[in-house]
Image 1: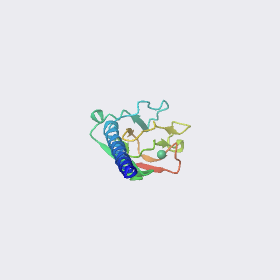
Image 2 (image 1 turned 90 degrees about the horizontal axis):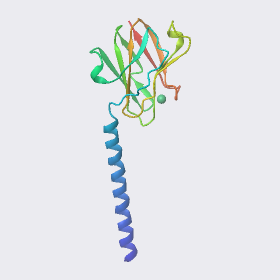
Image 3 (image 1 turned 180 degrees about the horizontal axis):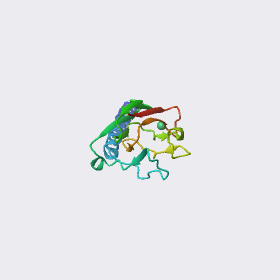
Image 4 (image 1 turned 30 degrees about the vertical axis):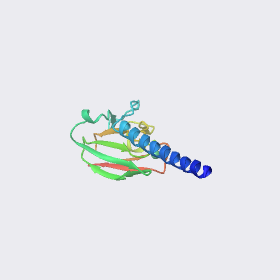
Length: 149
Ligand code: CO
């Protein structure tokens, strides 16, 4: 009898801890939502500019791309010149966007953006027509493209 009481108490303690852990995860997600990685890359391109991703300061022509389950969604997107794309990372893993130098006439190395944690976002303004392929620096199998026309 004693051992049964103990095991029941143990089980509910596990459930309580699990509940607290889930709540902690949810609340940290809410707190993290909207946060912006502060370190913009130094080697900016004329065609493709990382900009502050604070949503209140973004211009009106903003298109959102989600990062979810190690994929950019949508992976390929077509926008007009002057559009800002806002990436929002929904994954627990950190992701970024690194634009390939071949698409950027004024740069000779890839333009790597800041790593966004879960709930964080980064923004890029596209100034010139072209196709801009990008990938995630920590996960190069993650690929996307922005077509500006
Ligand atoms: Co990634």
